Image (tube, rainbow, N blue to C red):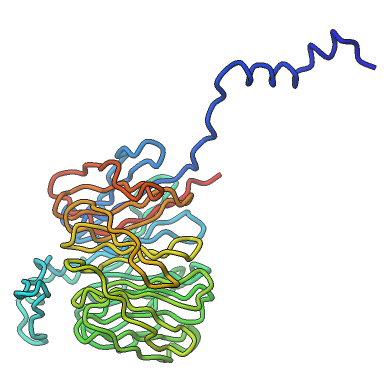
Length: 364
């Protein structure tokens, strides 16, 4: 049996006494980094998740947009394009984008395009070094990765196709014709199919990842910019920018469940579903905000003001923060999701024009 003196000298007892008398350190914040594709400066900006300060910029090539990390967190991929940047479309008297007639021949942008710049840039996340550019079809804008990280599904906007790329061999597996201006791409959680949204006519195609056949065609309003799934994959949401709507999709029957009207002035762009599947967040472009929608009731819960024309958004691994890439204001908004408000902004280099954003946990 321990004496009173021995019990008093117990290391656990001493530690407990110190914690009672002194303020104990707060639990360490989950370590992650935020990567932002800068469309006009041709860089990827790296922001530390611990202090929200810019840590580095990585030159990658022309017009970086879509950006994703490999499932193992070792590699970062970014879509590059030599097609010149176009200004956002003009608006009509009701605030709707005026879509230009599709031009296939003698297009000025095609004449000026540098097709040698097109591809997928590869960055090693351990060193922060740009490694190479992989051929990925013409004018890649957005893409999704397979669950195992072996394949990439790419939207080739100017030629109306989706490209399937084998990452290890850096070889194109196949091209899949869709319709005009494919943009948003997202793979289902179970890996059975991926969606490609086409801007001009509002087509969303579901493509089987085994045989690359179209297994569904859903019609929504024009400019479905982005698509994201509930964690169980039973439902997905797409953004119809021109109509100011979110589209709830039945992923079993490949049908439109409901078009969800957003408040006036919202032009939904990028979508992110919360990890628990209860909310979907939408950047609103010229609306200068992030719209929060309940995934069950389809009710708009909040409108959170951020920077100018937010495009890409991402969520922190702990679900506490949302990050929005604001192109015209060259900054990234940090949103406290418990408070439903922007708490600060990270200023990027002038003229960078942040476009896409992804959060990558640090290796343990």
